[in-house]
Every structure is written in structure tokens, then in C-alpha cells.
Length: 345
Image (cartoon, rainbow, N blue to C red):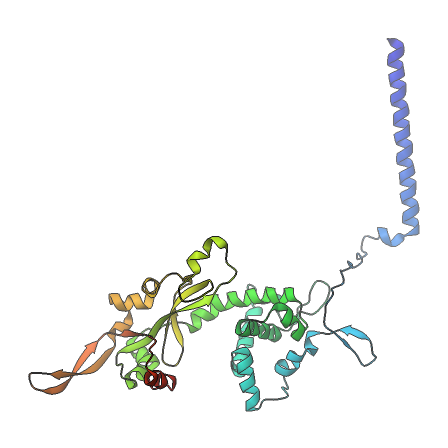
């Protein structure tokens, strides 16, 4: 028993000696490496930049020396045509083409770019990532904000893909996709509250809506109301049936809109399944329900109607109070359709 205990102690001592020798050899090897590469142990040395994966399909061009280089967004066709300060063409044809391509007049586009630029300077702005002068992690300058606004307008107006927009602007698809979601949030949270708002008084409604309807023979009318549908193709299968209506062959979301005769929308509901009819949608419209219940300020609109008095055989004027909405209805009468097309109704 005594011999076995001494043998175990001897083995432990031998194992400790081996560990000590191994540790000493590792320290000597580390010292040799540190002497041969002193920059690796320098505490203030900046680590080398991370190698990035090569991106295929980027837009390139040949410079004056004949070298193939990546095309920067500031040299893309859209930036040269629409975003340079010294625009090459501001003739009426240019404004007409711009309005047709981006669904927005050029002057309004410049105003929208200014709004986005002002928002980018805020600490919690939607576009602070693309603030002019910002740089990416690798030192690459941020994409021009005005060019990104054009990509969102073309995507909404003509349904281009992000790959098409990359080809026209030399901006990556991921940057365009990220900006588009922020642009939609900015429009829904900021621009919607500013532009889509109903009249707040009867006097404002007379100037904003009622003059055209009175001239068309609808005194007291303060807007045209109808349901519209927006396609929603990529929808989950469990919700597909609720978004299929008898009017459209594809899934859609339904909105109840109220506009004036100048085609300005000043009231709308949230999106609902297109299976719902107009009678259901109108219950979610605050302006329409307010006119129905008498709680809307537009109920104070005063107007006159000519009525025939059978007792005297004369036509007299009667004053009424309360606004009402005109519901659009399709008709097969060609004369009515022609007058409506030319703005007479």
C-alpha cells in the first residue's frame, strides 16, 4: 500500500513537470513571434480592414485612362438628368416628361427632396442614415438623397423592380429597398397628416369643395365618395378569400375615399378586405359618419334650392343647412359619360 501511494505521487510530479515544460515552450514561441512581428502586439495599431465579398452585377464604366471602374451614383443617367444643380433641360417638354415618368411635377419633387433633407438632419429622422455628407462603414459616401427619392417615386408610379432602379441609378438594391420602406413610413406618418385632411369649417368647405359642385348643379355637396381597390398580390393564403371581390380577379385592399372636384383626396379610411362592399366601408369613414350623425363641422353648410310650389304655381327659393356627399355611379348613357369626361359634371 505504501509503494502504490508513492508511485501515484511520482506520476503526478512527472505530469506537472511536463505541463511546466509545455507552458515554457509556448511562452518562448510567443516571444519569438512577437519579436518577428512587432506590429501585431502594438496596442494602438488599427486592425486591418475587413475584406469584403466581391459584388457581381455592379454598374461599371471606363474612365479616361481606359480602366474599368464602378460607376458612382453621381455619374448615373438619372442624377445627370434630374438631380444636378445646373439641369440641362428645363423646357416645357422636360416638365411634361418628368410628370409622366414620376407622377409628380418637377417643382414638387424639389420640394419633397427639401422635406426629406430637413428630416435627415433630425436626430430621430427617417432619413438620418442618408444625411448629406454621411459615410458608410467602409468610407463610401452615402447615396444622394434626391436620387433615392426618384427611385421610390418610380417604384410607386410604374412598378419598377429594385434591380431596374439599380441599373438606372448605380445604387444597390438593398439600399433602395431600405430607403423605400422609410419613405413609405415618412409619407404615412408625416405627409399624410399634412395633405389628407378634411375641411374644418363650413367656410373652408365652401372655398375648398362646394364652389365647383354648386356650379355643376349640386349645391351643398362637399365631396365625391366612392370605394377604390389597390392590388395586394402577395398575401397569405388564409387571407386570400377575404381579399377577393366580384369586381377584381386578384386580391386587393379596399379604401373609402372622399375627394373634391379638383381631384384632391381629403379623407380616406384604412385598408380593409376587398370583399367588403361600400355600405360596410363607409361605416369606417369618420367624415361620412360625422355628416350622417350631425357631428361634423360640415353640417353647418348653408345652401339654397329652387322648389316648385303647387299652391301658387311658382318657383321659390328654400334655404337648407347641412352638407352631403355625392356617390359616384357608372352609367351607360354616352352623353352623360361624355359630359363627365369633359368636366361638365
